[in-house]
Image (cartoon, rainbow, N blue to C red; front, side):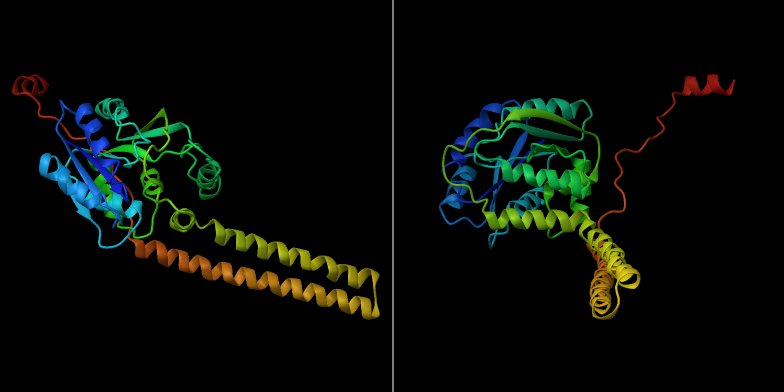
Length: 311
């Protein structure tokens, strides 16, 4: 079985069309569709209830308050019963027909299949900046530069993801961090035809903060480097004061050196404290220390072959 998971926020007008396309694509497969209503303000859950009434493969969940698409995705994964799950949004920008190709890659042994955008409708500068940060600052070099938020994962990957139990996290970054065998296929993201996106600037900024804090301590290291640089810079006015000046000028230069040096000491002290806090945070999240992709098992040896070996 394949579990299709869709978060929906004010997507009542798009869900029936998406259901028609999913029914056409998966007519010969065993599948379920889990729609997680992220506490919509329109008739989204009423539409979900109508779909559930006419199609037993559809399941609907409504969150008690708006939690964001990433937590909605997580909720859907916790209720998924398929051997494989595909995560896609409800706005029809990601073509469901692409999942047939993604399933073929999964059947060949790939555990995570990412659909990578070739084209980003509208102004994609903010998206490109986010993925640049993730690749170059956070250190996730394998993350596609153009973005990937439509993907398919194996049950082994789902179980590893749910074991992490992070509350504030980018689901895409965590899936990338887990590893496993993965491949990328390209597609053209389509423009939204109905409704308005609930992906506000505040939610985008929260995603950036969650992604950086959740997967990297590079801001702490920047504090360390800045503190060391300030201490080194403090030597310049101190040396100049001793070698070239005397009297009031020398005193002012030494005062400047003292201020810069103390600033550097404060930055280093904050960085040291930050490293301890980061390690405490890392332990509190209880992410798995490692993820097992596969285990090699000895196969049963036929009796005739075993007898030949004994000879």
